[in-house]
Image 1 (tube, helix red, strand yellow):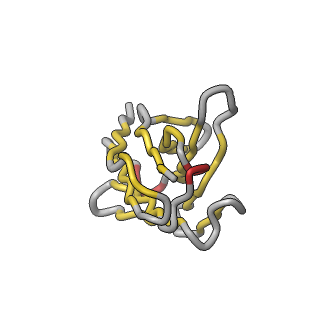
Image 2 (image 1 turned 90 degrees about the horizontal axis):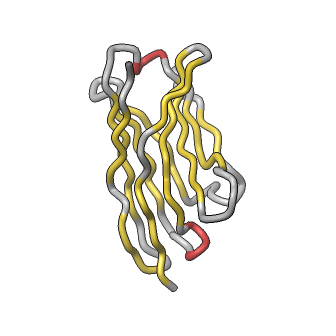
Length: 115
């Protein structure tokens, strides 16, 4: 069983930065694809960024050039560096780890960007 624990959320002013972390248990981290999602009340969860086991990354258009996803397989941790934050980035951020066809989710961390 894989467990994911997100951290790093908080309150920040528009234009500021935050770095989210997602630490995973288990020994399969290095072969997993990992993604960050976010969700606001009343809306569907949306993908923000992803990184494959080989290190390839993808970003939602809304965060390209501002967010950077990275992974450290030695620490079983994935990061989301968020710069130039906007009020519309306010959401609960979740990390998801996919191994084969199985998805594991963290509990989420709140990010609030004030204007």
